[in-house]
Length: 372
Image (tube, rainbow, N blue to C red; front, side, top):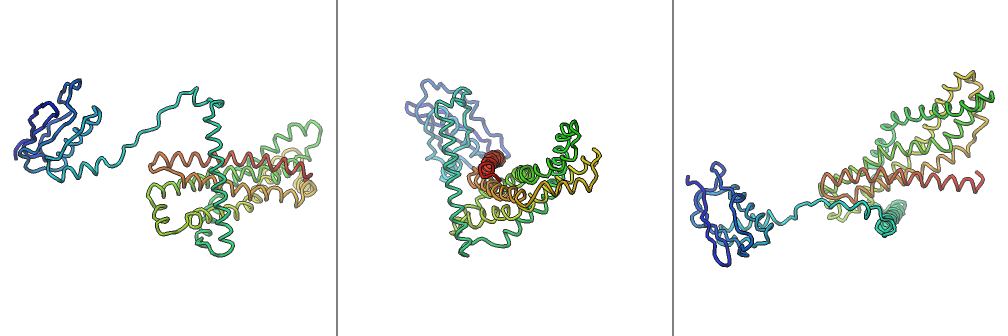
């Protein structure tokens, strides 16, 4: 085999490289990057010429790509018309996709310039996308209730299993500890008044009306909302969503609605389960303050009623919808690389928690105005 080489000729309007030899992987290929040029007066064109190229493989293309990058960095045109036809086709394929370039960092002052309008504009854009997604979801839900949607029951049952039974462990632990924390916080003040028995009222009302739904929502936002975003984001990267749309199938009906319905159906049950476990955790603490089990149970029964449970259940239904919307919206708007999947997952969790806090505050204000 003939060792690969090239002869450099500089003309008025071009630089010509006459390539010779066998450009194969088992040969030592000359490095074009080590070639020095006078770029201040460089001609506007670099021509690669097949003078006597024998066998060649990807090593020739590696050399051509070195020439291409050099030409691009110096705003020079690369001419491969006098090379083998396959070289031009491979170069066109290799340069068809624009390389990924990360977004430049924004100056901190400009980044936090609220009065400049950038943050406000982004906030309005996010809110608009949320309303558009919610509207599309509502339209799909109406189609589902009419029986015309492509939503499969087996998908809903699968996601119910993912959301419900597999989340019982972490909900059990968190709810039990939250109930104990509430009891300890209340006992600090109530013990001074000799009113330890009212720890039962504090824990029961707090868990049924507030903490049961809120803590369950936070857990599912980090567990299920992130999972939805990662699943749909990965499908976006693998072009599976494009394939579904190509088959004229609605992503809302086939991907989004089963996930959100599963959350809405199972979260009220998890909310009740969390409230009961929280009261159990409060009972464990109360029994250490000279409150018997029977006293705790009787005081709990007298402090709450069905309305308190319904307040938490209604919250949980809306929380479930918000978590599903945040996760699915972030996943469907994901980019095409692994970094975008990670960003979508983070966005889903952050948005879900923000939605939960805002919705919880709105419900508390509404309950207060209604006297519930």
